[in-house]
Amino acid sequence: MTPTADIAPYGTVAGPNDFYVIDDGKDHGPHETGTILGFWLYLMSDCLIFGILFAVHAVLGQNYAAGPAPADLFDLGDILIATFALLFSSITYGFAMIAMHEGNQRLMTIWLLVTAVFGMIFLGMTLAEFSHLIHIGATPMASAFLSSFFILVGTHALHVMAGTIWLFVLLVQMQTHGLTAENKRRMMCLSLFWHFLDLIWIAVFSFVYLTGVVL
Amino acid sequence: MSDKEGHGTYRSYLIGFGLSAFLTLIPFALVMSGAEIGVPFILAVVFVFGAAQIMVHIIYFLHVGLKVEDGWQVMSMVFTVVLVVVVLAGSIWVMFHLHENMMPAHEQIERVRNLP
Image (cartoon, rainbow over all chains, first blue to last red; front, side, top):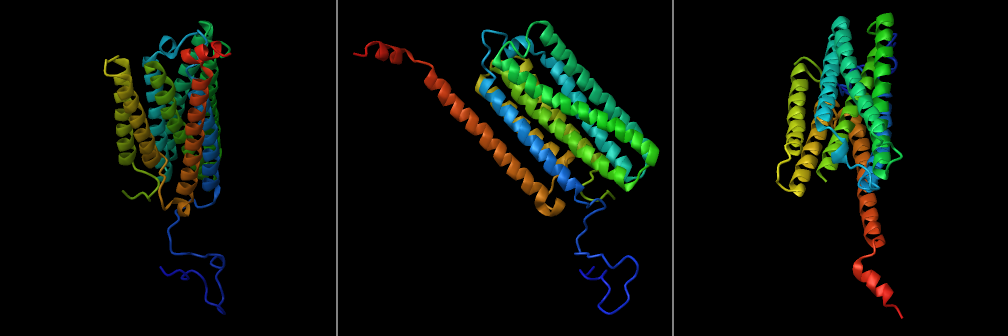
């Protein structure tokens, strides 16, 4: 395909649609709207927020103020289950994306619901952990370590909660309007968001939980 | 494999999942077993495997590639990573030295005590 193949030559009558088409010969795929790049830039700014929270935890993470240390508080078995819940939700969201590209809305809805279930398992485990910690007196006020722990893990959990709510809203929109271009674009954005949260969680369990218990 | 590049297939997602599961289980097993093999070695494994898993997610799940969005996706990501590394490394470096110098070592206490 030559770069100017879709542009009517000067002086000829253009068809109804090919007046604006400027094809540079590259295949941009069906979702080249700028929204995806914009959403990606939002994720990168979110990444900076998490980077700063990680820096805070790196500085304060060992200031226990004679309070409990990570090895006393964290149950790595539970963290492993939560990690796999999020990992499973990542792959089922990927399957939902494949079903969407195949135009199979029913299969996509099933995979999205499975994703939501895994997301809520993760959220429930985080909530249970937080309530357990607060119950035994390891509140954010107990030490600088616990302050930075709660703000970092809490910010991540809030993101997962926002993603889960977004997922349900998107399901309603899909039921109402079907697989429209707008809904596909929203699916792409939530896909990036969801996989990004799983990526942040890798850093959280490596840096906060595993490193915290070892040190 | 009829899908366009950047969407992934069942196969690519399963490969990503298998790699991620492996890269998750090894550090967890190492830490949870309580093996006596030295803290620096365990930390090195945790961080190397964590970084590797982040790369797996970027490639297999986020589908970041050099060609996507005319390269702006990779460029913004590299920029962000540089900023995060500067913030993290700078904070740890500065605060470590501040911590060291604020802790009066024994000879410092002695020196202050013997001041004329």
